[in-house]
Image (cartoon, rainbow, N blue to C red; front, side, top):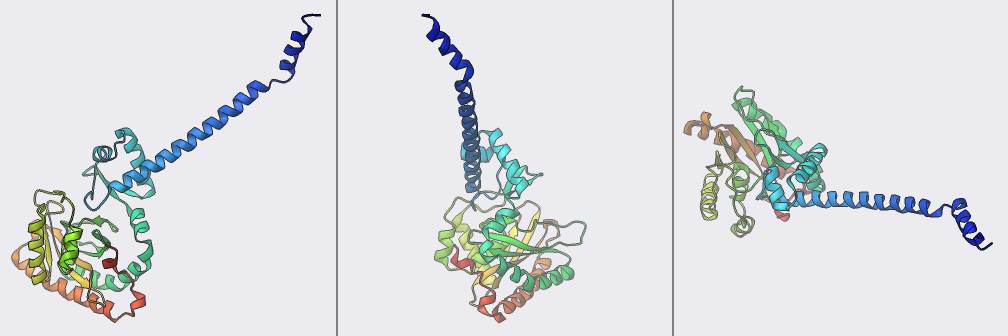
Length: 301
């Protein structure tokens, strides 16, 4: 009789096994919380990686990104692979480095995408004709406020030619297009924009701000800018600015070719062709109603 309460107690546990069920439920909630936390961590790390890509970090390797973010290299590589799949980043197999991809471009200019599309529709016939007449690759680059974006590219048909990914984002201090636009902007605004450490993209890249400012003055006087293997070794580019209806530089028409093909005579002829094309596009923009072309990068700097 004295053992009966204990026996009843054991019987209750057998009939109502609440503890194991509750433990399983708690464990399930903990797993869900852990998964949710992992997802949030992955999103935070993805954003950190995106933030590292400023105009001073045009293209970065996995190791460089890992060092800048403080993330483990394997973690960085895994996140980058996912971001490449979604188009937020692009991977250069030759340099083994990453840059912002087409989706990042589309997100970044979503507010002005219709205007850019309209701009391309107006400009592309002129770009195509220039490519056909010179048989050199021609790019149309719009000003983004921190650099230029190649929004249209007509590739040369020559076996030895330069290719460029459409929507490629270019830095400020090296490409011909960006320098052509900068050379026609207010000096104070240019100095503010160039307030960063210039990355030596090649052995020819200018890393002196004062020297670049001197060159921009010369580019302004001559009406065009050059890139003599400053962005990529082996590539020579010439850029001429395009102006909107308020006479602000909003884009550039660029001829891009293998450096081995460039001669003083070819440059002189290329500049004439580029200026004719840029002037024609500028005239088109100035004839449009203001509402049809609202992309004003000067306000986004």
